[in-house]
Length: 341
Image 1: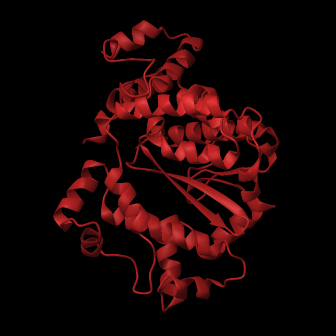
Image 2: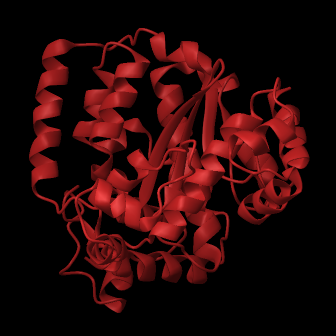
Image 3: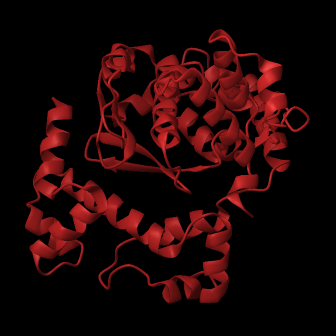
C-alpha cells in the first residue's frame, strides 16, 4: 500500500480547517479549490482524508496564512478528547500505564504515519515516535511540533501534575516562536536526535480520576470497530522492529530476519517498501534506539557503550553515532543532562 493513500483521521484536517477559518480563509473555498470536498469525511477515524490530499490542504493553509508556527497551534487544539473512542478509552483506564497500553494497541486510529516505541531507561520512561516516511520542506517540522503539542496535552489531561515532569524532545531546530511553545511545554528541547517524551516511570502507576470499567469496555469496543474498517499499516514494520534487538552476534541481517519471520528476503523487502520503509532504515533506528538507551546510563563510559554495541574501536562508534544523530555521544549526554536539570 502506498502511504499517500493512507487515511488521516477526519478530526485532523477538520482542525486545520477550523484554524484556517479563524485566519480568514473560507472552509468551502479551500476544499473546493483543492478538489477534496467529496473526499473528506470529517467524522471518521477510519476514512477521514487521504494523506496526499491532507498534505495538499496543510501546505495550502500554510502558504495562504504565512504561518510556519501553525504546527504548535494545531497540536494544542488536538487534546485527548479529540481522539474519539481512543481518547475515551484512555481516560476511562485505571492507571496512566493502562491508558498508554490502550493507546499503543489502537495507535493506528490516530497516527498511521508514525511508529511508536517505548523503553525504560533506569527510572525514566521514554516514549518515542518515528515517521514511517519523511516529510520534506516546512511540513516536516510543522508536523513534529503538532505531534509534540498534542501528545503532551493528552498526557497532562490524564495527569495534570505531570506538566512539569514531562521532558519533550523535538528533532527539529528551535524556531523563532519557541518561547511561546515553552509557556505551554516548559521542558521542551529542540534539535534533539529524536521526537520523544521522557518522564519518571512512576507516573505510569498514577490512578486516573475518570477510571470506569464499563466506559472502558464500551470505548474499547468502539475502537475495535473503527480499527476493523482500516487496512492496518505497518504490520511487517512492527514485526521487524520487535525482533531488531542487539545480540552477541550483532543485529539480524535482512536475510536472517526474513528467515526468522518465515519469509523470503525479497518478500520482506517488498512488504516493508509497501509500508513506506526499508530494512536499512529500521536497522538504523534500532541502532540509534539502543545507543541512546545505553548512553542514558551515566555509569557507562562511551567506550563501554561502544563495546556493548559490538564496536571494538570506540572511534568507529562515535562516527556512527554522529551519522545517526548529528551529535557525538558526549554532546548528546551534555544536552540530555542540561534537559534533565
